[in-house]
Image 1 (cartoon, one colour):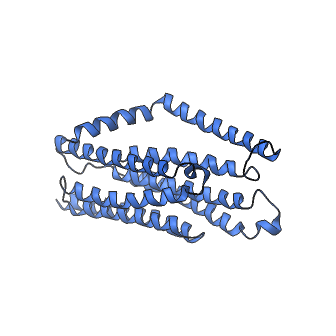
Image 2: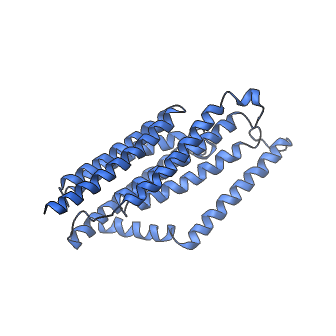
Image 3: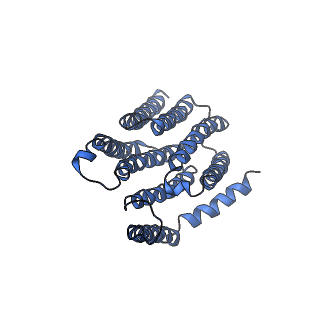
Length: 276
Protein backbone atom coordinates (compact mmCIF):
# COMPACT_ATOMS: atom_id res chain seq x y z
CA UNK A 1 0.00 0.00 0.00
CA UNK A 2 2.90 2.35 0.68
CA UNK A 3 4.78 1.49 -2.52
CA UNK A 4 2.75 3.86 -4.72
CA UNK A 5 3.14 6.99 -2.54
CA UNK A 6 6.83 6.11 -2.06
CA UNK A 7 7.27 5.88 -5.84
CA UNK A 8 5.49 9.23 -6.30
CA UNK A 9 7.77 10.74 -3.66
CA UNK A 10 10.87 9.41 -5.45
CA UNK A 11 9.80 11.00 -8.73
CA UNK A 12 9.05 14.33 -7.12
CA UNK A 13 12.34 14.25 -5.20
CA UNK A 14 14.39 13.52 -8.33
CA UNK A 15 12.68 16.36 -10.16
CA UNK A 16 13.11 18.77 -7.24
CA UNK A 17 16.80 17.98 -6.66
CA UNK A 18 17.77 18.06 -10.32
CA UNK A 19 20.22 20.67 -11.57
CA UNK A 20 17.63 22.03 -13.99
CA UNK A 21 15.12 22.53 -11.16
CA UNK A 22 17.68 24.38 -9.02
CA UNK A 23 18.51 26.74 -11.87
CA UNK A 24 14.83 27.29 -12.66
CA UNK A 25 13.99 28.04 -9.02
CA UNK A 26 16.90 30.46 -8.61
CA UNK A 27 16.02 32.22 -11.88
CA UNK A 28 12.39 32.50 -10.83
CA UNK A 29 13.31 34.05 -7.48
CA UNK A 30 15.55 36.60 -9.19
CA UNK A 31 12.92 37.47 -11.81
CA UNK A 32 10.17 37.84 -9.20
CA UNK A 33 12.35 40.05 -6.99
CA UNK A 34 13.37 42.28 -9.90
CA UNK A 35 9.76 42.40 -11.05
CA UNK A 36 8.66 43.43 -7.56
CA UNK A 37 11.28 46.20 -7.53
CA UNK A 38 10.01 47.42 -10.90
CA UNK A 39 6.42 47.37 -9.65
CA UNK A 40 7.44 49.30 -6.55
CA UNK A 41 9.14 51.90 -8.74
CA UNK A 42 5.99 52.27 -10.85
CA UNK A 43 4.01 52.58 -7.63
CA UNK A 44 6.32 55.33 -6.40
CA UNK A 45 5.60 57.19 -9.64
CA UNK A 46 1.87 56.75 -9.08
CA UNK A 47 1.39 54.65 -12.20
CA UNK A 48 0.20 51.44 -10.48
CA UNK A 49 -1.24 50.59 -7.06
CA UNK A 50 1.60 49.43 -4.81
CA UNK A 51 2.52 49.36 -1.10
CA UNK A 52 4.48 52.36 0.07
CA UNK A 53 8.21 52.17 -0.52
CA UNK A 54 10.42 49.32 -1.69
CA UNK A 55 10.95 47.43 1.55
CA UNK A 56 8.03 45.06 0.95
CA UNK A 57 9.99 43.52 -1.93
CA UNK A 58 12.55 42.17 0.55
CA UNK A 59 9.81 40.47 2.54
CA UNK A 60 8.43 38.94 -0.67
CA UNK A 61 11.88 37.57 -1.59
CA UNK A 62 12.36 35.98 1.86
CA UNK A 63 8.85 34.51 1.78
CA UNK A 64 9.54 32.78 -1.52
CA UNK A 65 12.94 31.57 -0.28
CA UNK A 66 11.37 30.07 2.81
CA UNK A 67 8.75 28.27 0.73
CA UNK A 68 11.58 26.66 -1.26
CA UNK A 69 13.36 25.68 1.98
CA UNK A 70 10.22 24.08 3.42
CA UNK A 71 9.81 21.90 0.34
CA UNK A 72 13.46 20.88 0.78
CA UNK A 73 12.69 20.04 4.42
CA UNK A 74 9.88 17.72 3.38
CA UNK A 75 12.16 15.83 0.99
CA UNK A 76 14.86 15.52 3.68
CA UNK A 77 12.46 13.59 5.92
CA UNK A 78 13.14 10.40 3.97
CA UNK A 79 16.91 10.69 4.58
CA UNK A 80 17.06 10.68 8.39
CA UNK A 81 15.29 12.13 11.39
CA UNK A 82 18.36 14.17 12.35
CA UNK A 83 18.78 15.71 8.89
CA UNK A 84 15.09 16.61 8.87
CA UNK A 85 15.44 18.30 12.26
CA UNK A 86 18.50 20.16 11.00
CA UNK A 87 16.47 21.48 8.07
CA UNK A 88 13.85 22.71 10.53
CA UNK A 89 16.55 24.67 12.36
CA UNK A 90 17.80 26.06 9.06
CA UNK A 91 14.32 27.35 8.26
CA UNK A 92 13.92 28.79 11.75
CA UNK A 93 17.19 30.73 11.41
CA UNK A 94 15.97 32.15 8.09
CA UNK A 95 12.63 33.07 9.66
CA UNK A 96 14.51 35.03 12.33
CA UNK A 97 16.47 36.89 9.66
CA UNK A 98 13.21 37.55 7.86
CA UNK A 99 11.79 38.95 11.09
CA UNK A 100 14.70 41.39 11.22
CA UNK A 101 13.81 42.60 7.74
CA UNK A 102 10.15 42.71 8.78
CA UNK A 103 11.03 45.42 11.29
CA UNK A 104 12.63 47.35 8.44
CA UNK A 105 9.46 46.90 6.37
CA UNK A 106 7.39 48.16 9.28
CA UNK A 107 9.43 51.34 9.23
CA UNK A 108 8.50 51.79 5.59
CA UNK A 109 12.16 52.13 4.65
CA UNK A 110 12.70 55.03 7.04
CA UNK A 111 16.23 54.88 8.46
CA UNK A 112 16.13 57.97 10.64
CA UNK A 113 17.52 57.13 14.08
CA UNK A 114 14.69 58.79 16.01
CA UNK A 115 12.23 56.47 14.33
CA UNK A 116 14.39 53.34 13.98
CA UNK A 117 15.64 53.25 17.58
CA UNK A 118 12.28 51.89 18.73
CA UNK A 119 12.79 48.70 16.74
CA UNK A 120 16.59 48.36 16.69
CA UNK A 121 16.64 45.95 19.64
CA UNK A 122 14.16 43.68 17.85
CA UNK A 123 16.32 43.71 14.72
CA UNK A 124 19.47 42.90 16.71
CA UNK A 125 17.71 40.17 18.68
CA UNK A 126 16.38 38.43 15.57
CA UNK A 127 19.68 38.76 13.68
CA UNK A 128 21.81 37.48 16.58
CA UNK A 129 19.34 34.67 17.24
CA UNK A 130 19.52 33.53 13.62
CA UNK A 131 23.34 33.67 13.69
CA UNK A 132 23.52 31.70 16.96
CA UNK A 133 21.31 28.95 15.53
CA UNK A 134 23.43 28.90 12.36
CA UNK A 135 26.62 28.39 14.42
CA UNK A 136 25.10 25.74 16.68
CA UNK A 137 23.69 23.90 13.69
CA UNK A 138 27.20 23.30 12.34
CA UNK A 139 28.06 21.38 15.51
CA UNK A 140 24.74 19.53 15.36
CA UNK A 141 25.46 18.19 11.88
CA UNK A 142 29.02 17.17 12.81
CA UNK A 143 27.76 15.08 15.73
CA UNK A 144 25.36 12.98 13.65
CA UNK A 145 26.50 9.38 13.15
CA UNK A 146 23.52 8.27 11.02
CA UNK A 147 23.24 4.74 12.34
CA UNK A 148 20.33 2.70 10.86
CA UNK A 149 17.69 1.83 13.44
CA UNK A 150 17.60 -1.79 12.21
CA UNK A 151 20.01 -4.11 10.38
CA UNK A 152 17.50 -6.02 8.24
CA UNK A 153 17.53 -4.52 4.71
CA UNK A 154 13.86 -5.28 4.01
CA UNK A 155 12.79 -3.76 7.31
CA UNK A 156 14.90 -0.68 6.64
CA UNK A 157 13.42 -0.30 3.16
CA UNK A 158 9.95 -0.52 4.65
CA UNK A 159 10.77 2.15 7.22
CA UNK A 160 12.10 4.49 4.54
CA UNK A 161 8.95 3.91 2.47
CA UNK A 162 6.84 4.85 5.50
CA UNK A 163 8.82 8.06 5.92
CA UNK A 164 8.39 8.90 2.24
CA UNK A 165 4.64 8.42 2.54
CA UNK A 166 4.53 10.69 5.58
CA UNK A 167 6.66 13.28 3.76
CA UNK A 168 4.26 13.24 0.81
CA UNK A 169 1.36 13.93 3.18
CA UNK A 170 3.31 16.83 4.76
CA UNK A 171 4.01 18.28 1.33
CA UNK A 172 0.30 18.18 0.56
CA UNK A 173 -0.50 19.86 3.88
CA UNK A 174 1.96 22.69 3.26
CA UNK A 175 0.90 23.31 -0.33
CA UNK A 176 -2.77 23.10 0.66
CA UNK A 177 -2.33 25.55 3.56
CA UNK A 178 -0.39 28.02 1.41
CA UNK A 179 -2.97 27.76 -1.39
CA UNK A 180 -5.87 28.23 1.04
CA UNK A 181 -4.37 31.53 2.16
CA UNK A 182 -3.79 32.55 -1.43
CA UNK A 183 -1.89 35.74 -2.07
CA UNK A 184 -1.57 36.41 1.66
CA UNK A 185 1.06 33.66 1.79
CA UNK A 186 3.43 35.71 -0.33
CA UNK A 187 2.33 39.25 0.52
CA UNK A 188 3.15 38.58 4.17
CA UNK A 189 -0.17 39.12 5.94
CA UNK A 190 -0.79 35.39 6.29
CA UNK A 191 2.71 34.02 5.75
CA UNK A 192 3.64 33.61 9.42
CA UNK A 193 0.37 31.79 10.06
CA UNK A 194 1.28 29.27 7.34
CA UNK A 195 4.52 28.42 9.12
CA UNK A 196 2.91 28.30 12.54
CA UNK A 197 0.37 25.80 11.21
CA UNK A 198 3.03 23.75 9.41
CA UNK A 199 5.30 23.53 12.45
CA UNK A 200 2.30 22.44 14.53
CA UNK A 201 1.74 19.65 12.01
CA UNK A 202 5.45 18.78 12.23
CA UNK A 203 5.13 18.24 15.99
CA UNK A 204 2.40 15.64 15.43
CA UNK A 205 4.25 14.06 12.50
CA UNK A 206 7.37 13.70 14.67
CA UNK A 207 5.34 11.92 17.33
CA UNK A 208 3.83 9.70 14.64
CA UNK A 209 7.33 8.94 13.36
CA UNK A 210 8.36 7.86 16.86
CA UNK A 211 5.45 5.41 16.94
CA UNK A 212 6.21 4.13 13.44
CA UNK A 213 9.86 3.57 14.33
CA UNK A 214 8.75 1.25 17.16
CA UNK A 215 7.78 -1.27 14.46
CA UNK A 216 11.44 -1.50 13.47
CA UNK A 217 13.33 -0.80 16.69
CA UNK A 218 12.26 -0.60 20.31
CA UNK A 219 15.74 0.33 21.51
CA UNK A 220 15.45 2.79 24.39
CA UNK A 221 18.12 5.14 23.02
CA UNK A 222 16.43 5.42 19.60
CA UNK A 223 12.99 5.99 21.11
CA UNK A 224 14.30 8.61 23.52
CA UNK A 225 16.28 10.46 20.83
CA UNK A 226 13.37 10.58 18.38
CA UNK A 227 10.99 11.68 21.14
CA UNK A 228 13.47 14.38 22.15
CA UNK A 229 13.67 15.61 18.57
CA UNK A 230 9.89 16.00 18.66
CA UNK A 231 10.32 18.20 21.76
CA UNK A 232 12.85 20.32 19.85
CA UNK A 233 10.25 20.83 17.11
CA UNK A 234 7.74 21.85 19.78
CA UNK A 235 10.18 24.47 21.09
CA UNK A 236 10.58 25.80 17.56
CA UNK A 237 6.80 26.04 17.23
CA UNK A 238 6.68 28.06 20.46
CA UNK A 239 9.46 30.25 19.09
CA UNK A 240 7.31 31.17 16.09
CA UNK A 241 4.54 32.37 18.41
CA UNK A 242 6.85 34.30 20.76
CA UNK A 243 7.61 38.04 20.57
CA UNK A 244 11.08 39.40 19.67
CA UNK A 245 13.90 38.31 21.99
CA UNK A 246 11.93 35.35 23.31
CA UNK A 247 11.64 33.88 19.81
CA UNK A 248 15.44 33.86 19.56
CA UNK A 249 15.84 32.44 23.08
CA UNK A 250 13.40 29.59 22.41
CA UNK A 251 14.89 28.87 18.99
CA UNK A 252 18.43 28.74 20.35
CA UNK A 253 17.21 26.69 23.31
CA UNK A 254 15.74 24.16 20.87
CA UNK A 255 19.01 23.69 19.00
CA UNK A 256 21.05 23.50 22.23
CA UNK A 257 18.63 20.87 23.51
CA UNK A 258 19.05 18.91 20.26
CA UNK A 259 22.85 19.18 20.60
CA UNK A 260 22.78 17.87 24.17
CA UNK A 261 20.42 15.09 23.13
CA UNK A 262 22.69 14.03 20.26
CA UNK A 263 25.80 14.00 22.46
CA UNK A 264 23.96 11.94 25.09
CA UNK A 265 22.71 9.53 22.42
CA UNK A 266 26.20 9.01 20.99
CA UNK A 267 27.67 8.42 24.46
CA UNK A 268 24.86 6.02 25.33
CA UNK A 269 25.46 3.91 22.21
CA UNK A 270 29.23 3.90 22.69
CA UNK A 271 28.88 2.73 26.29
CA UNK A 272 26.35 0.11 25.23
CA UNK A 273 28.79 -1.33 22.67
CA UNK A 274 31.61 -1.40 25.21
CA UNK A 275 29.36 -3.19 27.70
CA UNK A 276 28.69 -5.96 25.18
